[in-house]
Image (cartoon, rainbow, N blue to C red; front, side):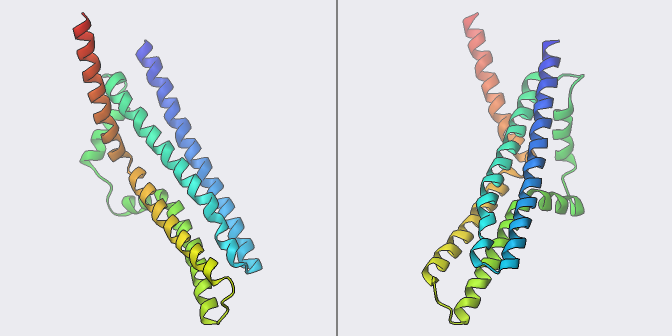
Length: 195
């Protein structure tokens, strides 16, 4: 009975983490689109970078929720799943047999790389406007603009790496699963030695 209660509580924690991801993503879209609207309206070069200040921490927070979900799911497989409750095990096995292909893979990419795509849009518009200023011989703040362009490119790379690392739930689950299995083996060995 305790196992089923733990299982249900951890399933709830996974659902909470999923909802939190969705909430952060909706906040991300709303704030970035609003700021970009002001930036285009005011034609202020530096406002195009403002969304990056929001995108980076939100992308990292969403990645952490994905890591948490994989961590909990792997724990459930190793310690709690049985013949009655096998969602995580069955889901894991199903994903190995039927990996995402075609349109399903495209949807997965668009869903998981949204922060990266938004960051690329902001960085691209900013850099395009910097290049336009250079071509137009408007060289005021050139050094600052170049530094900010480099930072914008760096944030694109950073978000891509974070997203790539934490977007594939099944691969994350494999890593966490191997960790929990090792932990369980060590724990069982210690319990046997203490008997």
